[in-house]
Image (cartoon, rainbow, N blue to C red):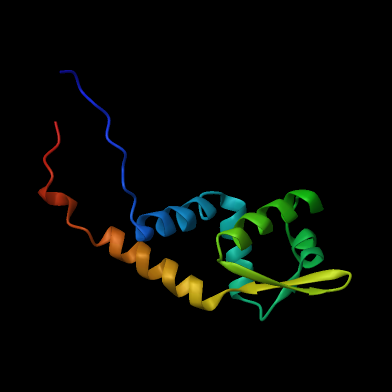
Length: 110
């Protein structure tokens, strides 16, 4: 018979790593994370002052980082206070390090 496609069984680790990698895939998000890593916390307005972007754009990037679990937000009406989610940050670091420590030299290419 012909080639059949088999469903891929993604591990929980692969899914989590991909979630973190996707959140880290935009330069603005990297800048936001770098800024937050040098602060105890900040508000959306603080980021709008240091980034040459509209508040709605900054909010969208914060949403992506929060959904990935890399940052956390605390509602302090009418603002939201953001900071690095340390536990998930360490998990992301561990997963990325583990991925890049894989020995891909064993794989022959072309």
